[in-house]
Image (tube, rainbow, N blue to C red; front, side):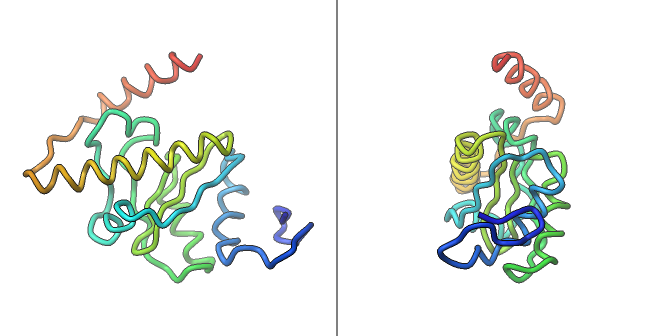
Length: 153
Protein backbone atom coordinates (compact mmCIF):
# COMPACT_ATOMS: atom_id res chain seq x y z
CA UNK A 1 0.00 0.00 0.00
CA UNK A 2 1.45 3.32 -1.09
CA UNK A 3 0.05 6.79 -0.45
CA UNK A 4 -0.46 9.37 -3.18
CA UNK A 5 2.69 11.05 -1.86
CA UNK A 6 4.65 7.94 -2.90
CA UNK A 7 5.41 6.91 0.67
CA UNK A 8 4.96 3.24 1.55
CA UNK A 9 2.14 2.70 4.04
CA UNK A 10 2.31 -1.07 4.26
CA UNK A 11 4.38 -3.55 2.27
CA UNK A 12 6.08 -6.91 2.35
CA UNK A 13 8.01 -6.00 -0.81
CA UNK A 14 9.06 -2.78 -2.53
CA UNK A 15 6.34 -1.13 -4.66
CA UNK A 16 6.14 -1.73 -8.40
CA UNK A 17 8.76 -0.09 -10.59
CA UNK A 18 5.77 1.50 -12.33
CA UNK A 19 4.87 3.52 -9.23
CA UNK A 20 5.44 6.91 -10.95
CA UNK A 21 2.99 5.97 -13.71
CA UNK A 22 0.36 4.73 -11.28
CA UNK A 23 0.70 7.76 -9.02
CA UNK A 24 0.38 10.12 -12.00
CA UNK A 25 -2.88 8.43 -13.01
CA UNK A 26 -4.34 8.52 -9.51
CA UNK A 27 -3.28 12.13 -8.95
CA UNK A 28 -4.72 13.50 -12.19
CA UNK A 29 -7.79 11.39 -12.97
CA UNK A 30 -10.82 10.17 -11.06
CA UNK A 31 -9.66 6.56 -11.47
CA UNK A 32 -10.11 4.33 -8.43
CA UNK A 33 -8.34 1.38 -10.08
CA UNK A 34 -5.63 0.71 -12.67
CA UNK A 35 -4.81 -2.43 -14.61
CA UNK A 36 -1.40 -2.55 -16.31
CA UNK A 37 -0.65 -5.51 -18.60
CA UNK A 38 1.75 -6.72 -21.25
CA UNK A 39 -1.05 -8.34 -23.28
CA UNK A 40 0.44 -9.78 -26.49
CA UNK A 41 -1.75 -8.32 -29.25
CA UNK A 42 -2.10 -4.87 -27.70
CA UNK A 43 1.62 -4.73 -26.96
CA UNK A 44 2.48 -5.84 -30.50
CA UNK A 45 0.16 -3.18 -31.87
CA UNK A 46 1.85 -0.57 -29.68
CA UNK A 47 5.08 -1.23 -31.58
CA UNK A 48 3.66 -0.34 -35.02
CA UNK A 49 0.74 2.12 -34.79
CA UNK A 50 0.10 5.54 -33.26
CA UNK A 51 -3.39 4.55 -32.15
CA UNK A 52 -5.83 1.65 -32.15
CA UNK A 53 -8.56 3.03 -34.42
CA UNK A 54 -12.33 2.67 -34.12
CA UNK A 55 -12.55 -0.84 -35.57
CA UNK A 56 -15.59 -1.79 -33.44
CA UNK A 57 -18.27 0.22 -31.68
CA UNK A 58 -17.21 -1.03 -28.24
CA UNK A 59 -14.12 1.16 -28.44
CA UNK A 60 -16.54 3.80 -27.13
CA UNK A 61 -16.18 2.14 -23.71
CA UNK A 62 -12.52 3.21 -23.78
CA UNK A 63 -13.30 6.79 -24.83
CA UNK A 64 -12.64 6.31 -28.54
CA UNK A 65 -9.53 5.36 -30.50
CA UNK A 66 -6.81 4.30 -28.08
CA UNK A 67 -3.65 6.36 -28.34
CA UNK A 68 -0.15 4.97 -28.05
CA UNK A 69 2.01 6.71 -25.45
CA UNK A 70 5.49 7.49 -26.70
CA UNK A 71 8.06 5.00 -25.51
CA UNK A 72 10.04 5.84 -22.39
CA UNK A 73 12.02 3.62 -20.04
CA UNK A 74 9.82 1.75 -17.57
CA UNK A 75 9.47 3.23 -14.12
CA UNK A 76 10.41 6.77 -15.16
CA UNK A 77 8.63 10.10 -14.79
CA UNK A 78 9.04 10.44 -18.56
CA UNK A 79 6.88 7.34 -19.09
CA UNK A 80 4.32 8.64 -16.58
CA UNK A 81 4.09 11.92 -18.51
CA UNK A 82 3.77 10.16 -21.84
CA UNK A 83 1.00 7.96 -20.47
CA UNK A 84 -0.92 10.91 -19.04
CA UNK A 85 -0.76 12.74 -22.38
CA UNK A 86 -2.11 9.73 -24.29
CA UNK A 87 -4.71 8.88 -21.63
CA UNK A 88 -6.36 12.32 -21.78
CA UNK A 89 -10.10 11.79 -22.33
CA UNK A 90 -9.71 8.01 -22.46
CA UNK A 91 -9.90 5.06 -20.08
CA UNK A 92 -7.19 3.08 -21.88
CA UNK A 93 -3.77 3.67 -23.37
CA UNK A 94 -1.25 1.55 -25.22
CA UNK A 95 2.31 2.05 -23.98
CA UNK A 96 4.72 2.21 -26.90
CA UNK A 97 6.84 -0.96 -27.06
CA UNK A 98 5.70 -1.84 -23.55
CA UNK A 99 2.08 -2.80 -22.78
CA UNK A 100 -1.27 -1.40 -21.76
CA UNK A 101 -2.95 0.58 -19.01
CA UNK A 102 -6.66 0.83 -18.31
CA UNK A 103 -8.50 2.69 -15.59
CA UNK A 104 -11.91 2.45 -13.98
CA UNK A 105 -14.18 3.40 -11.13
CA UNK A 106 -13.64 -0.13 -9.78
CA UNK A 107 -11.02 -2.81 -10.21
CA UNK A 108 -13.61 -4.92 -12.03
CA UNK A 109 -14.25 -2.14 -14.54
CA UNK A 110 -10.53 -1.48 -15.09
CA UNK A 111 -9.96 -5.22 -15.58
CA UNK A 112 -12.89 -5.55 -18.01
CA UNK A 113 -11.50 -2.63 -20.01
CA UNK A 114 -8.10 -4.36 -20.21
CA UNK A 115 -9.79 -7.48 -21.57
CA UNK A 116 -11.75 -5.35 -24.05
CA UNK A 117 -8.58 -3.56 -25.14
CA UNK A 118 -6.81 -6.85 -25.86
CA UNK A 119 -9.88 -8.12 -27.75
CA UNK A 120 -9.99 -4.95 -29.87
CA UNK A 121 -6.25 -5.19 -30.59
CA UNK A 122 -6.68 -8.82 -31.63
CA UNK A 123 -9.65 -7.92 -33.82
CA UNK A 124 -7.70 -5.14 -35.49
CA UNK A 125 -4.71 -7.41 -36.09
CA UNK A 126 -6.88 -10.11 -37.66
CA UNK A 127 -8.80 -7.62 -39.79
CA UNK A 128 -5.59 -6.17 -41.21
CA UNK A 129 -4.60 -9.67 -42.35
CA UNK A 130 -7.71 -9.68 -44.53
CA UNK A 131 -7.35 -6.15 -45.90
CA UNK A 132 -7.88 -2.54 -44.90
CA UNK A 133 -10.40 -2.47 -42.03
CA UNK A 134 -13.44 -0.20 -42.31
CA UNK A 135 -13.38 2.16 -39.37
CA UNK A 136 -16.25 3.86 -37.58
CA UNK A 137 -16.61 7.63 -37.65
CA UNK A 138 -16.12 9.72 -34.51
CA UNK A 139 -19.79 10.74 -34.45
CA UNK A 140 -20.84 7.08 -34.39
CA UNK A 141 -18.51 6.40 -31.46
CA UNK A 142 -20.03 9.39 -29.62
CA UNK A 143 -23.53 8.01 -30.29
CA UNK A 144 -22.53 4.58 -28.98
CA UNK A 145 -20.93 6.16 -25.89
CA UNK A 146 -24.19 7.99 -25.15
CA UNK A 147 -26.20 4.79 -25.56
CA UNK A 148 -23.82 2.89 -23.26
CA UNK A 149 -24.16 5.61 -20.61
CA UNK A 150 -27.97 5.42 -20.90
CA UNK A 151 -27.93 1.64 -20.48
CA UNK A 152 -25.76 1.91 -17.37
CA UNK A 153 -28.13 4.49 -15.91
